[in-house]
Image 1 (cartoon, rainbow, N blue to C red):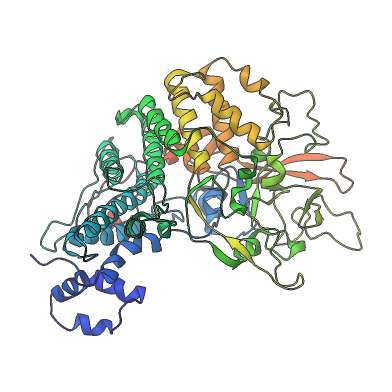
Image 2: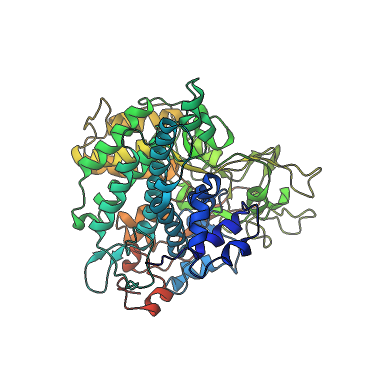
Length: 569
């Protein structure tokens, strides 16, 4: 039967890897069979089907998903993110939708998987077999990564009352088939993604890390040349995250998995990584090209200044776009580890003194020295001869919360207007070790409490290690916790701090069914010109309904056929 391969030919043109014109391929045969045959006959081109899954990955942070959480707001008044926050999130307006992107990637990955066994990658049979096993595992791991994004963004309680996932498309569709594919259940989608993870991790598949052995033929398949491709540890993190989500309150009624199984997956990956081994320099891993914290990341891009241009304070010629919230700042404990609402040493009129050192690494607050300049977000004095452009709500590029984003910003960058423009190196991290640790801590605590041990580690040990790495000086507060509920609160808080501005918070509070938090307005801090008065105020409205712990199916899909929408949309 004729298969849909026109898009595959179009992809190859898009990648620019044809040595002859695309029209010559398309003109050969009405059903484009020659396209597929020509592609299969050329390994360098056949790999293009797989490479689309990499091409669609993000390579730079935009912080959109953080702006629609309680961690931040944006000073861009015309942003559709603000419309989403103010009650506009629906099936037609969904700035964070990923549906079309994932199904496009799935088409290419499925095309690759259906044709890969026809490709001769290397003349040597052993090398060809090893490469074939590895690249199929790579495709399965990538498909698991992308379909997890789809499940996270679009799973939910359907209008039929069932917990549903997405329509599973595990092959290239034939035009003669019924293309009106119903949504699979959440459990079916969970098992589908899990199967891809497990297949990618089978013997002969993906190595935990891409390292050279010194044997040329082995290194061509498994060597460090593949550094920025998905690896076994990244797939193990995806598997642990998948199980963590399925065990969480918003999805636990599916009975897809248990907290204990989620903890086991994470513990296995931690052991394979090398155990609980943390370094203080990894707190700002994003500034280091060789951080052990990074499991899988994009290629290092040099001379970049886009993030800084969007987020630097206006006095440094940035647009100050992403503004951390007072809600977020309040989550940072004192340096001794005590929450600020429990500490006698916290002074609301000197709020940044003796705080968790991570606060100064992640947030630019009033009086902080950033890039050699003291940034003052306090209000301008009346009649000031030199108005401070960094002041709260001074102009369109000024903060609306009293804070600017520091995490991921590289102080080596100079923007146009600030001397000689200069960029810096940037990369995007898809998988990092601390997320794996926090996945374990959360799941293990839910499974057995603060001291539930797997492979020699416990949630309490993990949280203490993360906090000590960050500069907390004492373990007393963590050690004083005696029950699952209190440890849960702490783990959720540590996850919020450590994984901040990495796209997790929006989804975390939803999988926890925290309907109070998704609807909590973002607060800011108004500081008087002489810094003697500190007033908390509401800076950005959040108007989300309880059913919006789940995202919608795109309106365009529901207009094509009778696919079941999630409740409320």
